[in-house]
Amino acid sequence: MNLRVFDDAEDLAHAAARTILQSGAKTIGVTGGSTPKRLYEILSQSLPQNVTWVLVDERYVPMSDPQSNAAMIERTLFARGVPKRWLCFNTALSDPAATARLFEEDWRSLGIEALDLVLLGCGDDGHTASLFPGTPVLGVEDRISSEVFVPRLEQWRVTLTLPVLRAAKLRMVLATGAAKANVIHEVREGAQHPVALATGGLESWWLVDRAAVPPE
Image (cartoon, rainbow, N blue to C red; front, side, top):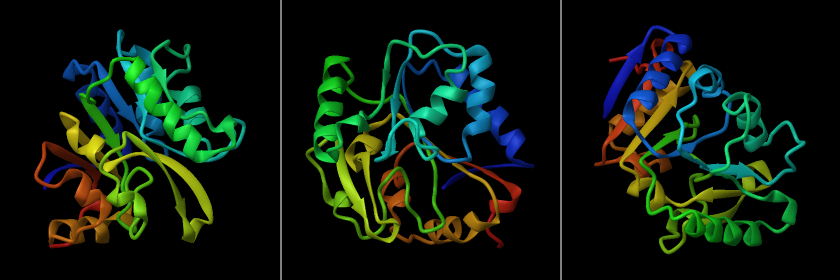
């Protein structure tokens, strides 16, 4: 595990922003959740140009819902204007399977072959994107995106699949807070959590704050 430790979440966000700006990536996958918000606020001040932005996953809720990943990203990363090449999930279709199929069509129409860089989170249960432990989407190998029902949340979601995350040139996992320390320890020890399945054996950087560092 390529673990990079920062004093706090603010330092982590600035380091992640520098990495993205210096990477030259032209196709970037962006994740939702609370951890990357500060990163997006920083990036919005000098947003890279000529980039295709791709949403990694979405809760199946309207854009007006506070849980919407796309809405959060548009408020933060795209605060100065939503770029033309922004691929997110159309949850207004009210059909998760149809939304996943449309996303795949849009992916192909944009000429995307693979992501240059993808930002990922890490749940305290080891999930990343909307790839949750024990869900059938973990076995989907012939799709770019897929719908998935998460029983413990009683919620439909749509997500990029494992093969797409693994095909990216670089994966950056952002994790902050003591609640993440245990799962990071388990991944280090070889636990096959979804986040490990998405990153293991590949060019993957884990950017964490000190609170998330597992004890030795």
